[in-house]
Image 1: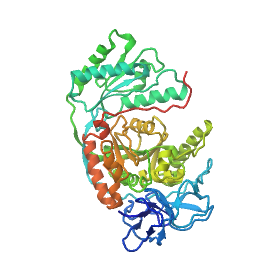
Image 2: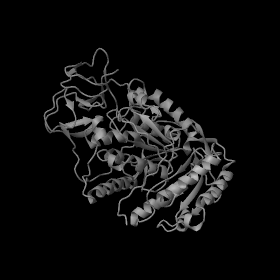
Image 3: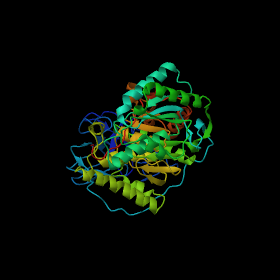
Image 4: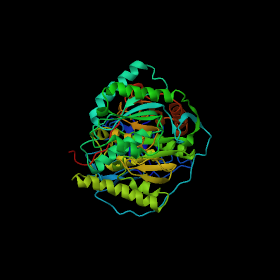
Length: 525
């Protein structure tokens, strides 16, 4: 096992790849234990644009660990004076609150964020050429009547209001009893939520828009929209908002308008079942794939293994003509200038500035600190400041140009890399990505989570220990990147994701964990 990893030649800290003991002598020469990684955040790039997990162009001077340093945490590779800048990923992640000698553990006790309030931004483009030529790869998907492509043929029951969640579950239970093999459907899901009534303004609009997005999702082979009859989110108005839709695949039920709502619901599900019987997968180019990029429960390895893997995949997929979406706006704070420099043009740059400042105002309007992050789990895993977290998080976006900025509830409009307005909350952000027409979500984690959105949610472990411990939660292990070249692991990842897009179930699907969560900002009546 290697000992330390330095993310960029300009860094003055390195990450411990295993627990370090006080007094342990760490030598660069001899066993080749220390190496430098080139950040994919756009600070320094290799010719391929990928994170170079095997570079050794910068040698670390021999240092002695002055304290025990947990795995995934940082150790100073050079002396940092009080008030001096702590560098990781080739960028500042905070300042030293005391003199930090080489070999000292660098964490919450001696480093603080450099971020404070809003900033002024200037468009200084730093666009990088595409690095992955088209390869003509395909997956087996479902071509819908409107031209979109699904990677699942799912049956969704979409309550317009939380009052009918329980009855929706009874309807689905009856359907599964009559069709234990689900027939033409891969999954049957009730998109439960507590909203749809007693909401005003933006909250009402966001609930309605996310549910509309779900009804129109390309993974849906059939949808039953189910209302109570007296809610704000009126079914008749909801139906009108859908615009043009396939009436053989979307049905509507209002519980107060019928005698036996379970039997009425079953009749409509039987119609959807019959309509889907002829559905079949067909080869589809990767350019039709839309992938959401998300992380949760980050640790000190997130920005070293799993997030750079997603960045490399994002660049690869965009090179094939496909699309990726990055969200979690609060976890862009401190790394936003990297994304702004990659704006395709000044219009997109202005949209990114709005995205960042709008979310800062959201925090401030509630009297909360803009930089109240990272979480306790992040800190336990070795992340010390928001800059530390954000620079690691944005590794998921690779090096491609940002082509669009989407508001919460909007669907994907342009091929390439888009940014999406949503919080860092795992359930809310993943649901927003799914609602934006991502057929699957890639979710990196160093702490582990059983969560899954209402689309296949691929959980990528940042380290070998997590993957071994929680194999029933996790789908792919990025831990081997500590020992193997990015090119090798990326090829395995591409092959795996093509299998998922072609029907291989993810862990959240196998475990029957498929959820929806909706953003809320206002009052409840």
